[in-house]
Image 1 (cartoon, helix red, strand yellow):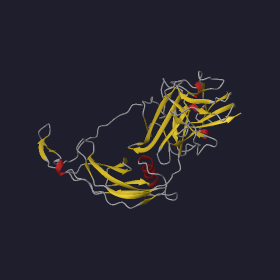
Image 2: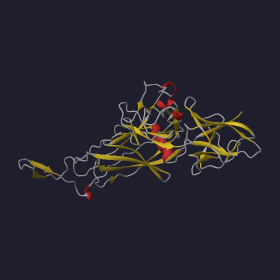
Image 3: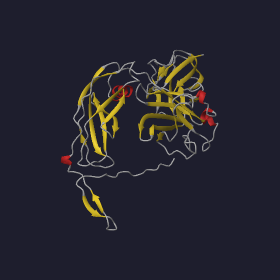
Image 4: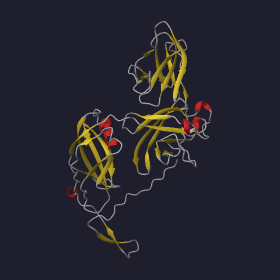
Length: 376
């Protein structure tokens, strides 16, 4: 996809006007300049009341921050950035061209618990402050004072999106794979898919896909006109995401919903050559990989049957048939997948419960991935 960037960094009607002539020498044109930086006036953030986030108001209420306008000595467009701080961490809450910013309680809760490290279902003191700058310029910014308020956080449920495309053997929207937030309120969603469906479509042909909010076209959905892609998407007439002629089979897709301009958020895709099982089982002997295969209808990666014997039952999951990136440990039970254990990036060798034949299932639509070891 070709991006067109339109320059818009024009200062409007700056103060201390002087006059000059236009190129034809017939009309006076204002020549403008800002005040000295020492005369800039910072915005003043108004007090914020304590915020309580719970199951009843998490998705239906919002918090509004208000402030007085900054001044740069002229009626320029000012861009404000609102920051929150706690636990020695600072995160951008949002931006505004007006003197207020409204954030949903669900998003505020996610920011405080995920970016600032406040424990869910706990109360914490949070500080807020603003920076203000002349939009579209590198003019020195000014900063407001800080105000403090308490936030009672809430352990939010994780939300999900859907991915639908040609890799499902023909845009099967009723069976579009579901994928989940990395944690409640992060607004970031991840899934590992077999984009080329085991070779059923050819790179450079119709590889399109879109991101949906439900398994139906009646809800919100986005192509490259709705989510800003991190790669150059080949031009097409339907605005579907595509990877191009050099597409890999496997992609770890990451969607972050955070509205910016005309976009609802961003999307990136990391190409992977293989996801495989290796270990002390008969089919491997720590020297041969057994590739995991994607089943889009079940939205699960499977390998097996594989057979362990002799009591030495270690194994790992690895990317690209290489040792530089692996998944292991699997000692923490999953809160979401029955009988599953969370995989750890770079984790230690895992062990099956005992000798026998197993089917391995990897749920790569959650963060962290989850493994289920099914004894046959």
